[in-house]
Amino acid sequence: MEKALFAFWMILLTVFAYSMMTRIYKRFSYSFLIPVLTATTLIVIILVLFHIPYEDYMIGGQWISSLLGPSVVALAYPLYKQRHFLINHLFPILGGVLVGAISGMVSVGLLSKLFGLNQSLILSIIPKSLTTPVAIEVTRGLGGNASLAVVGVMIAGIFGAIAAPAIFKFTRVSSPIGRGIAFGSASHAIGTVKAAEYGELTFSMSSVTMTLCAIIGSFLGPIIVWIFQI
Amino acid sequence: MKILIILLQTGILSLFYLVGTIIHNLFDLVIPGSIIGLILLFLCLCLKIIPVTFIENGAGFLLSILVLFFIPATVGIMNYSSLLSFHGALFISAILLSTIFTIGAAGIAGQLFEKKAEKRKDEKEWKKPYSHSG
Image (tube, rainbow over all chains, first blue to last red; front, side, top):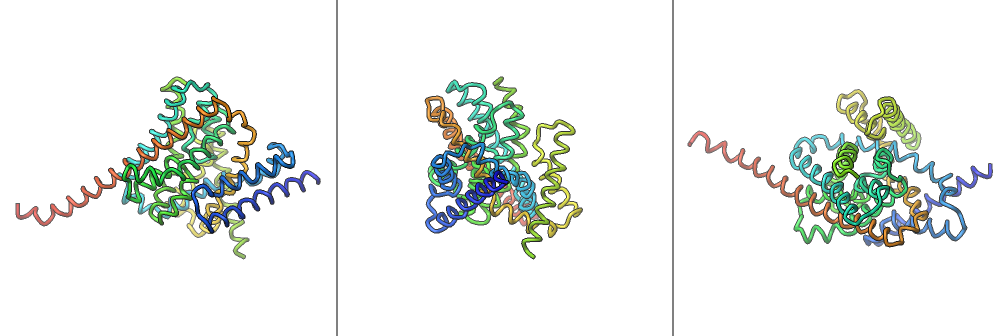
């Protein structure tokens, strides 16, 4: 009973932190205020203050996490709504998505080998450009650490959403298709949330790209590990 | 009423996730169960096996608060204070550099492919009126 009550409090804390930070972000909309960053920081501070270990927090947190799987399935809905759009732009989308998926995985694999990271760290960051639930399962399949993978995915997502506007300026990428593909293939769902600020087309592009990258990435991960002999 | 519809449709989405996970375990596939569920649902929608009205409210709701479902996993970063070491800094730099590279490469490639596709479309439209004169 006490455990159920505690779980309830942890769920409430998460939902509260999320809705409060979302409201603050909508009010001020600075890149560094994105809710996943601010809400996470707030929750970590509260957990540390009250000496609650992460494992205990997850008694409640896992209930929220359990909706990740159905949410990935739900991505079929925007993909279906955009099927005509997808077919009309099939060549740029597939081309861009392949470049994005391959460059994301190959570059991080090469860099981490160059930096001399140990095997378990490398296997955990290979899927860093994929959406969280997919990255977790790809990492497990490769033999990496799921928690580290989530950290990598979050860093790629948050940093990508913050840095993308400057990179677009520098590389002169102004088309909604190019921007959407960049957001979706480098920064998954966090990038897609940010892409919504650029308009409907960029958002659609990003969500289609994220979904296609997740599918391609789950095949590509094992191949890249095999090629680089990690 | 709206809440009931969302709950029911979330149930349908969970069912697809469950079927995907079962297929994943049964055939020992590399693709995660959630992705298999996604592909199955997409096919069912395209083939009109399931009308889109059966899932649109639930899917729209889940996706509108997607970030919330990520937060418990993100909080796990608190267990990795070891990331504040030299190796952690390398780990983070590899991700940052790769992300910059990916955004640049994917953005440029997407824009380039888009222009090429447009040019091809334009050429097709231009060729038509000239074809019978030349």
